[in-house]
Image 1: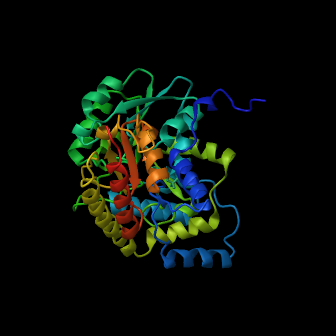
Image 2: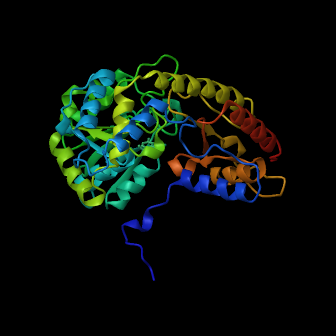
Image 3: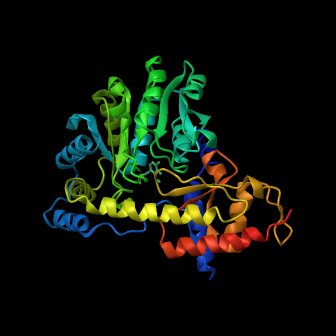
Length: 401
Ligand SMILES: Cc1ncc(COP(=O)(O)O)c(C=O)c1O
């Protein structure tokens, strides 16, 4: 019996989750695998945040919360948006969900009609496409080229827009490319959007704090205040506070959009876990020192990876400006042959060769719709990253033409 709806038939499971599952399976078979697949900080959640959760549970904060999230957390989000991003939002313009992923899902389900298009900048976080497909929308990819540092250009945006375009999704800094946008670049994109009042901008800023080389983060809604009534800012505590398992993300935008997203949430999950919300409140309101400590560690690892990767003939990598990934070009290795006589025809083949022969798990660029690349997560220990590069160097040197 086929249980899959036609809407879900083209939706793929997350590629990085699949790679991590394969890593776990190979490890269970006794193989020594370094997993650079999944994108999550390898740090523990800071103790003051864990303590806040503990206290909340002991204090009986164990019941359903308001559908949009607790008043304390919504206030903390409004304060954070003002403090870090210069954005003015009231609590009724905020929603808290089970991770940024659910925010994106609710936004799409709440607003898309069949045939509506969503513009997605490749390479992109794979879920964007699959979330749009899940709700019956039409994802339309815009290729962001390495010569533009993987940034969306106003020209390619203009060309991609049609009368059916409903959303543009931007991710700053970008997973997987690390692309970042300065104020002028955002304003240039805003100038195109101004001509198309039907388009809503989703600005996924979940990596805002992981920014390198003294860059200052600019939020889309800050660069484009005149478009504020059609910008949904998406963020969360997963990456900045090492809280991926707590599942707290949030959105801030026009009240009418947030209201319809709350309607979706009320039928899907209700508000997220009350204890995780208390922890997230402490994360946003409490001391912020760990945010910078994590950032510094990610910058050191980025440097280590950029140096190591560029020593491997066949790989290319320009230093990413933010996030904790390296999107490594591997064009020169396509068409080579492994010692077992297998041909490397694609980045899928290369990622498969690297996990089986070098014991290093990476995600092929095909998952992000820009090939041939492999994505490495740099959210791993310096020792593991160094060892992974050494292993990959040895394995790549065995490929012949
Ligand atoms: C660009 C981007 N947005 C959103 C998410 C989802 O974050 P959350 O854990 O808050 O659902 C991720 C997670 O990898 C991501 O890379």
